[in-house]
Image (cartoon, rainbow over all chains, first blue to last red; front, top):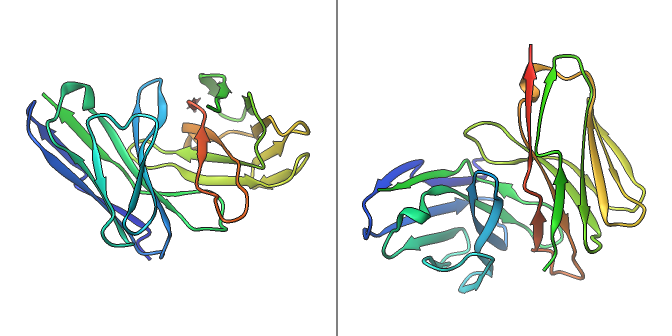
Length: 112
Length: 114
């Protein structure tokens, strides 16, 4: 059972480039989330989804877009990367009625 | 919005010492969770608490859900080098089927000197 899988694990982008981070879960969870982690800032929610085809903004959504076309996948897009988006990105999922999230192992993104 | 204050921000201890960290909130939760993040990995759930006053253990870890529902603490006894990492508290307020909002503390960085 793989749980939550994030790809890629590492990426370096130039300012202005675009990219998509992929999150896949095999636990049939309804809810999925994208967080970013920066030193001293903890985990900050970017966007989340409560079901296939639905997404919502979290605490820090600017500069990011998401899509949940399939229940098991949650994509995070950066249309025009900025150095301020250098961070470690975590995807998580959870099931209705079960408390707590299962996290992926993260994507370390550097924007130069 | 809800905010969690987690303290201390960091701790440097000797192997064998006990550790205590806590979280306080400006509002109530009906679930408290404690996660550990190893270097280079995602957070992993350690303990979940569901009732005010509940005390739960997981090996050398003990966590409690405060009576007021606005705080929780985590104790680690007889620390070992593999306890190194970032510990996060998280609060969850849910009703019915809407359990999807977790609020995280900023974490406690634990360093254990052998």
